[in-house]
Length: 256
Image 1 (cartoon, rainbow, N blue to C red):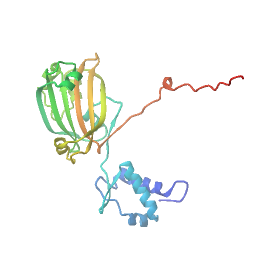
Image 2 (image 1 turned 30 degrees about the vertical axis):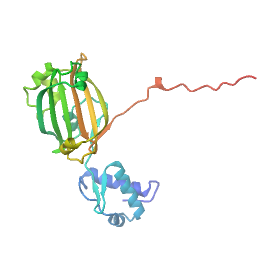
Image 3 (image 1 turned 135 degrees about the vertical axis):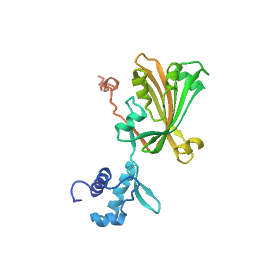
């Protein structure tokens, strides 16, 4: 129940709606009650209701469709920015069901970027696996992973459709994955990628490139993946290193 007090009324209403979404009263795709219905139900003004709804739209919990109403958005697929984990590992840890819609496995000559990442000569043959990844049966990413030949010869013999590459490397091939260099940048879905991700051409995507190393600092693979930016959110704690904090300047008075 909403009560006048220190907490603004629109924040109380936003908290109620957020709680209803989290508890399953409203599910992804459900239409929210109209502004008028929320006003009557909670005895609030139109401006208060509008403030609450806009706040939740800003959080990504709701979205509005012109002339049709306000709807519950799909839950973002969160990933930890500072943890080295695979697509399937991260999805399962957060309660999602990972999958693969399509997979292509072949040996390709390494182009300049792959050769640099894997530290091999340009045009050297490397095993390249492209997979269209899904979360709860919805396509959310296209990943292309290139393996050095020594690893690739083992990988190509395995079922690579719905299997976690991380599990294959660590549990079947005995590779001790230790660290990775990762780059995340803004990208654009051109025609072919847009069709695969089921988004309009020109839609923003998250482009994520990763070079993975084992415990001896040997390169194991290079991945270049495109993720739907509307479905993914990366989070991570960052700390301020005291050594980088400049010492406060001392005010010095001069004798004249």
